[in-house]
Image 1: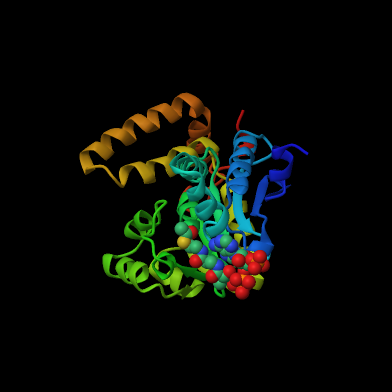
Image 2 (image 1 turned 90 degrees about the horizontal axis):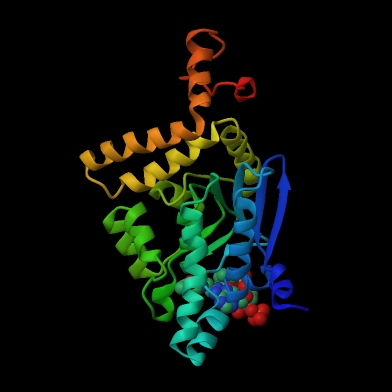
Length: 278
Ligand code: ACO
């Protein structure tokens, strides 16, 4: 069997009504990320990104875990034994798919069903929205085994949490549950595990109803402007909207027409009917 075929089982994909449910699939290892999984995830993201069958991508985990972070044996110890080149290669494979997620063409939703540790904060942050089970467990456990939160994890908590909470979370090695993760702003919302899939499905249904060009422009804008001055952001947003218009001027005009002329919907209360767009 080729290496690619062996690696394929590390990620499970189901596409249903425009939603790609992508699951880290090493439940017996709590979905910790080994090089095989990292390579396969990049292949899967590549394949789904421009597929017409997919409007929204959900990232979840098989079994009791979302992801127990990096594989301490296969990602860290075995690569370190091979030398710096192997370590750097493994880093670029992991960081590569998380970066790909941050700028993904489709909207992305993290569905955190269980354990979420360390390196898993990379893909957590890569997803545009995040919904957790109340019963899920989040932790920066790096300090518990003697490293700093690398692979972007320090940046993720510094960006998403107030400084005191980020410091406490990173330095104390104490876990928080899904409810606390939502209160802190690490995820959008926490619901009981039994309701998690239905809640994420409802979010996906709303996203599917929006103009896809506007969604991609919006998600990129929110990430980009965070690091800009107000004036730079104003300028970027003018140009980003003009670029979006060149891909989809008709959608925007249809949205205005259905409100102003047809009076069939109100933009303050929902999305225009895309199916009417010529
Ligand atoms: N790396 C390598 N193997 C792992 C990892 C990991 N991150 N997480 C779990 N496993 C393996 C275990 O070694 C075990 O393997 P085995 O069956 O061959 O003995 C198997 O997965 C099941 O793990 P258990 O510990 O038995 O599962 P349990 O449900 O009792 O505990 C928990 C789950 C709490 C997630 C525990 O496995 C754990 O603490 N994992 C490590 C979490 C962590 O700190 N990750 C690193 C973060 S730092 C970073 O990512 C840079």
